[in-house]
Image (cartoon, rainbow, N blue to C red):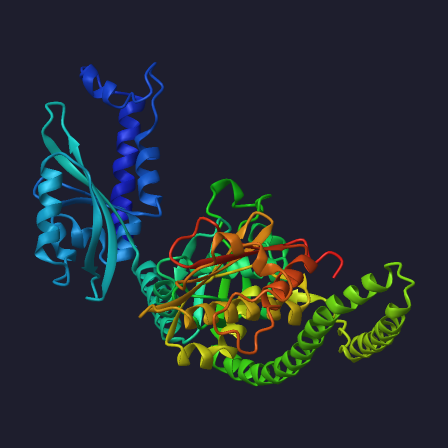
Length: 543
């Protein structure tokens, strides 16, 4: 009833002003009339329109004097606070203040508005029933013609529900971050430009393991090579990918890391105003990358595989040793047979030489039979199918196979692989044998060295369309006169030849050439030997 009474008084005041403007009394100062002429040219807007607009505004509005005594409140203000205008008029605005607001906030408010500036901020107020709410306020000084503060115009709204929503979102964000950080798997949100938008503790730990090299780039490079995944087309890839195994080689470590990777496509927020009523033509997406480390299980699988490879290579080594021994015998037997053939081709009809000729013919016949037997005894070369080969993985296997030899020789291995290498198409056993020959060669060189510190350094990298592998040792090196000879069959420059038949580097070169590549000794390398292998990414050609 009191509210209705207040509205009646306001309506009466509006009607009185409207009647006054419609027919001003004689002698009314022109300045009073002009005060209502907001648009000029005597196009008066009725005060009733202004007052009704303020009255019906959805935002709470109040007007106070310079001492903050309330002179006017609108309907929205009454609805929000629970007070009627009669209960508020003449009261100080502090009637709404709550002790939950720090005094410093009020001090900042007054300092601002007394300097004739607009203040915006939040206060904790309470309604008539003492229920607290969060108010978002804008207080603007209204100046008189002399520039002094005449009134304060206040507009505020209840933002309690917005505050509660923000707190819930913050809680959900904190909860999500805590859960992700506690997760043992690597997780990162990646933008289409490869920038990491969010990551967890496991990702940061991996970043440290790779010495600051962004793991996301390594994962994406590996995924691109394995499944052709292109982050630039993330919005067109559908549902992403699941459980793709990726191998990464950390710098300075001989142990590779294996991860099972999954990717989930996530649409980015579109905050552009022009897209409020429609979808943007240019969709923007992120990728949630999840990488679960499986190094332990993969090592167990690789250990079992390594045992099979060890047995297979032992068999291959035995066959190869037989081939080298028989080939060496053929090579050595061929020389005297050639001499006999040359002697028989010389014309000589004397009776004294006839007996010798007959002996030579018998020797040549026996020699040819022996040569045929040796050729028949040569183990046949096995035909191997080509497949996609990871050179880092092959080198790691060879190092494992040679561990006992290197430990016995006190040899340290310095392993510097490219973290991610593209695969090449080739014969796995032939390539594995290639690197086994080179590492065995380095071990032998260090065995004949008088160095106290013995080291083999392995490097892999990509150069254009080639994979480059460098095998280095700090042994005695290869003399200039032998740099070509060492690749010749049966050449052996070792002081302690033992079981070596001089075919190791020959076989290594043959395997590289068979894959369209090359093996060469770096003539500029000082302090030992560096052998460089180059293999084309385009594949093994005719292998």
